[in-house]
Figure 1 (spheres, one colour):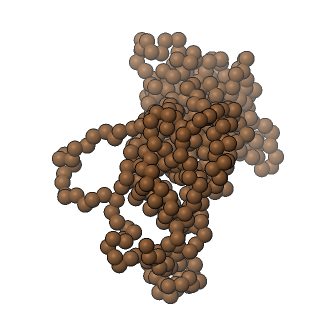
Figure 2 (tube, rainbow, N blue to C red):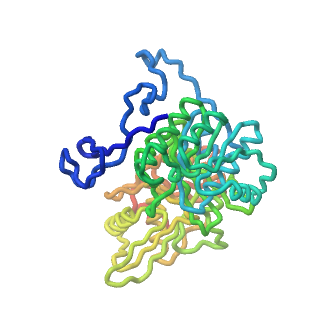
Figure 3 (cartoon, one colour):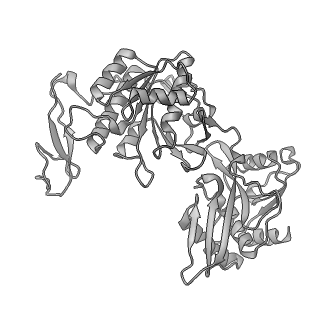
Length: 457
């Protein structure tokens, strides 16, 4: 196969140059030339061929839409994040900090799929075959028949995929793979984009499900071009502290399932194990209620979970600090202003620290009410009642807005034995609903109403 010529394309004007220059010769923009491969003139060698055959124009009503077939991985938590299992021809991108457990989880999943009769392939570009075998023995996967290929050249990987025809293949990692058609080093923007495009096209054409492992930057985002996330069908992020035994996988994008779905795992000597009751992780076991603690019900995808919000208010200096872990810091500053203006609780000369227990990250505004109640509890040194939960969004005008799927949140709290709930009025269930037996629900419309209610409990 003849090697395609490389060229440099300007990201601003689209002009090309046969060699790299500091300034684009067409639009005079600086540092905009990016290495690419010149398109071949032969139709058979067209790198940008369609992923599927061109079909006739038709209406949506005439298209026979059937549910996609899924293959369970053998891990319930991973299947939950994927939307039910692996999809034929699907491409999954999973990223996370080094050592957090990406390779461990995927090796366990491949072994389970192989034992169920699926043909699997593990392509390792960062470790040798012996290192992968040692890990499998540490995980207790004795006698595993998972096929392993230690290779980083794209053309050889594609040839192996075509020859072996696995049902699922793992590429660990996409940043180590390089194509001979480009002269840049592995991990560069051009190499990552080109290799991901070829692997995606191979998956769609052959029906092999491919999982790409990606590196992350210091900020926690996937390294490489942003177009990498647009190419694939599913994007998963590993979350959690490497010093903790618990890990979370969150679905940021999923064409075959719900987004923001999370799976909870515990790291053990035998690898990652799914946690069936994640609420137990995010709740501290206090023998008695303590000031500054409030439990909320958050919604992660389709799963309601109880998370403890802890706040510490202490005397600050001339420039009081506002620090939050697992919550948006800018939103914390806004809530403190609302708390002062509408509830008369002043923290302008106090340091305020807020933490979501267990390393979970809460991005939904339904945590507002619990955060404000925890801050007030810490400031006054008075604990909230035992078995107390709260959730609801708080607006700048002091109103308490409803949270989505409030009934499911309350059912989860009642199931776990909580007895008192302060919720937005719009989320209050109908009277005599047996699903909430044992749970006293107090609906509120404004933040000052919630504060006065808590004082009276």
